[in-house]
Length: 200
Image 1 (cartoon, helix red, strand yellow):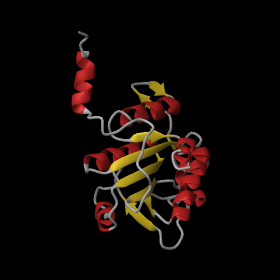
Image 2 (cartoon, one colour):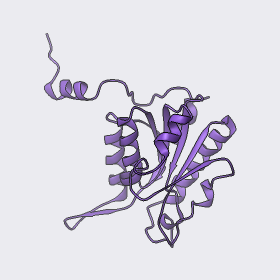
Image 3 (cartoon, helix red, strand yellow):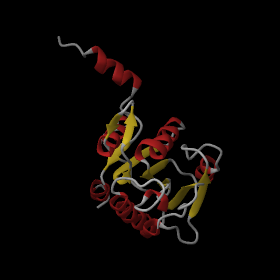
């Protein structure tokens, strides 16, 4: 009789199969879109430009338009940082959409986000934004730990090169590593196209 390798056994023990790659629940009244820090300082000419933020913002805008048409909850998060702190016009909020300002990487820390989600009966979050390895990751891990079902739209997120002990880690590797980690137990990770295919 074959035995389950110990590393696989421990993985299943630590990360129960409540998150399945490529799958998500239907988008109902208990689902909200969380767009994190798509702000001008992350774009060319800004204080901290990322790698291909325009592509990520364009994909986030597609998901945003879907949520608007469906009449579902939309929450914009912006970091209190200047210059360039305005939410980029590709995903700029319209009247009636919630905007939450924050001072930390975690969108839940010292903000009304959790209370707002609870008041509106939200149980599932579709998450995108900037930076993948910082504020997107922090919010996703926190939300999952708090009991929310999380879906991350990976090509609607962007990040930058990092440096560790003199070694440059390319943005693509930072992005992929972060998403692989999140997909291991914290979130369903989908592309924008996969997101739309799941709701045709």
